[in-house]
Every structure is written in C-alpha cells, then in structure tokens.
Amino acid sequence: MDLVIKGKNLDVPENARDYIEKKAQKFDRHLQSISKAKVEVSEEDTRSRENRYVVEVTVDSNGSFLRGEERGPDIFTAVDAVATVIEKQIRRYKDRIQGKKRSRTRISKVADAAEEAESTIDDDDREEGTLIKFKRFTVEPMSPEESVDQMELLGHDFYIFFNADSERFAVVYKRSAGDYGLIEPELG
Image 1 (cartoon, one colour):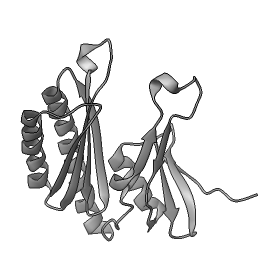
Image 2 (image 1 turned 90 degrees about the vertical axis):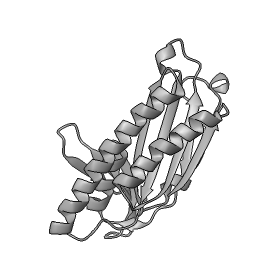
Image 3 (image 1 turned 45 degrees about the vertical axis):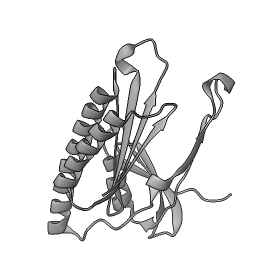
C-alpha cells in the first residue's frame, strides 16, 4: 500500500507520522486490495480545543474510495477516531462486495478521485455567499447503481458521474425518504 501523509498548514511531527503509518497498516490487513491511502492532517484555529486537529483519510481499493474525517484535541486522538471510521467502512465495503459476488459482478473501477485537484480561497479573503472551494477529478463511465455504491462508500449525499448507459454526465443523490434520485442535465 502506498501511503501519503501530508500536513495542511502544519508540519506533521515524526512521531505522529510513525503513529499514522502504524494505524494505516491495519487497513491493509483488513482489506488487501488497498493500493493507496492518503492522510491529510490540519490544524484549525478554533475556540474549541476538542476540534483543533482534523485528520482526513482517503483509501483507494481497486478504484473504490473510502473516506473519513475526524477531529480531536491532538493529532493522535483524531487519528484514532478516523481509523475507527475507516475500519467500519472497510467492513461495510467487504460486506457489500461479498453480497455483490453472489448477486452481480464486482463493482467496476471508478475515477481516481484521490488525485483530485483542489484549491480553496482563504477565510480572510472571502465574502459571505461566495464560492470558496473548487474540485477537479477524473471520471470513468459507470452505471447509476455503481455510482450509488460509490456515494455511500464516500459518505456523501450526492455523486457526480459519467453514465455509461446514456453516455452523459449525471448526478445521483440521496432523498430524504431514504431512496435515491438521478439527475441527467440536458443543454437547452
């Protein structure tokens, strides 16, 4: 497993890097198909000391992405919390894969979203109601069912994808009733 650890607005101490590596090895033990894991540690200037450090983990398992983000008063507490979240997602992912093997073919590879290019506007420079975050990512064709699986694995409420059936970009989203919706825009 290729592990990338980076700090955002801080240098990650060596002892914290070692701790993160030790925790990440457990992911690999639970799911051998993990090819890449990205860990981003940041420190936020908040009044609450309990939420000072943020640790975000993205794991790539054969093109399926698992993501978790947790906060804590120190790096180690946040790492422990996000490791618990990722391990839970790994168990859920493995259960889905086992169920799909019985009923359907495996989930196909999806976009390499871990390599997404992103830029953010500084909090000091923004005005209320302005667009502050931009993301770019590569997409591969998939079915709406596969996009729902990806959305659930990432823990998002919506997911943008290229629909292999209609050969258009589309969005799946989770509805308040618990079911899913599909949006396919058309040029007017």
